[in-house]
Amino acid sequence: AKIAVLKETAPGETRVAASPETVKKFIGLGASVAIEKGAGENASVADADYEAVGATIGTAAVVTKDADILLGVQGPDPKALKGAAKGAWLVAGLDPFGQRKRVDAYAAAGVEALAMEFMPRITRAQSMDILSSQSNLSGYKAVIDSAAAYGRAFPMMMTAAGTITAAKAFIMGVGVAGLQAIATARRLGAVVSATDVRSATKEQIESLGAKPIFVENVAGIEGEGAGGYASEMSPEYQKAQADLVSGHIAKQDIVITTALIPGRAAPRLITDAQIASMKPGSVIFDLAVAQGGNVEGSKPDEVVIKHGVKIIGYSNTPAHLAADASALFARNLFNFLSAFWDKEADRPVLPDDDEITAAIRLTKDGKVVSERLL
Ligand code: NAD
View 1 (cartoon, helix red, strand yellow):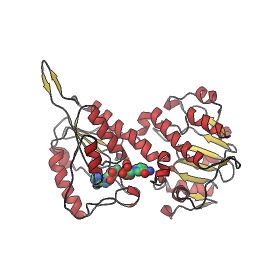
View 2 (cartoon, protein in one colour):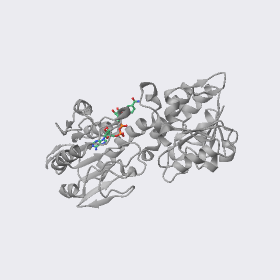
View 3 (spheres, rainbow, N blue to C red):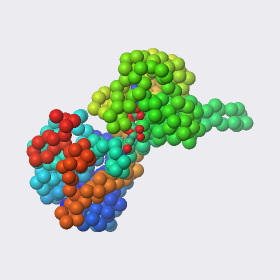
View 4 (cartoon, rainbow, N blue to C red):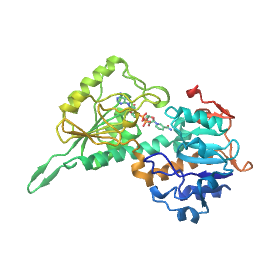
């Protein structure tokens, strides 16, 4: 099989879908790998690094020509797929809800589009899950960049000139990103608290040495929906949560919000009035800013200052850690493709009745086939 890796074209996208390590492993499986010139540049991977492990480097057209599998971080312009083999696979984070028209175009182009963010949350697929690998880094980066924007120190310091008190950090949403945010803020010396709608996270928060802030005894407390994702909460629960958070947030220096609900706008967790209650100089990092934001007034890739509070959020947080984010993303793709590799066919083969196939396959034989898009 010929595997092609294109240079990402989306604005601000710095990652690349293959690393020298995964290229070497693909070649070990018997594949050939072609990489567009400069594809790894922004992630600190030189063309020579790919060549050294056996990849060929070329223009987009040469790389795509007769490719059986195209790897991407994001989905390419459907026009870029011209020249690929008939029925070629496109394996990437395809943003199926946000890029619905593109999915139609992939179908029309005869490409089999496989959306890696639809990977089911089952044990077998854990090592293939781009949402987990990228969220983990995002949670880390949110704390690091909040610390940089904060005009004070995180740890308590006792100095000859006097004592500096520890920063108070509050993490809202304790999924993969939130757990890493808790751990990172703790490492930097902050006093950390956290909340979530899934009560199962309470123990996880405690085990990381942080304090759980939870709504108790309200209908709809069990916020666990399908597949371990959060579901939307009852109005009663939302009101109780808002009251609890209001009291807590006024005392916080750093707030990191991470709450997402798949396929819908992010829930609003922090209002302008709550921001106004915080101390000037506090920092809020909205990891959901690209999905509409958890924080009132947050804007992607801007530092918004409201009531003296800095509100930060990136449209693409993992792109701010391009080297590590690429290395893990590339491994997710390799783990997926190698798990289905068929030596005789000289390529991966996806059984129609496999749970993973059903979840991630968006298009096949010219049609959109994903249930989530029909
Ligand atoms: P996510 O990115 O979907 O959401 C982030 C967190 O925000 C979640 O914990 C969610 O419950 C929380 N949240 C949603 N609405 C909220 C609200 N109104 N207020 C407060 N918090 C709110 O979550 P995620 O990182 O994808 O993780 C979700 C779960 O799935 C975790 O338990 C994780 O361990 C699990 N998971 C399993 C696998 C696997 O088995 N392959 C892979 C990844 C994640």
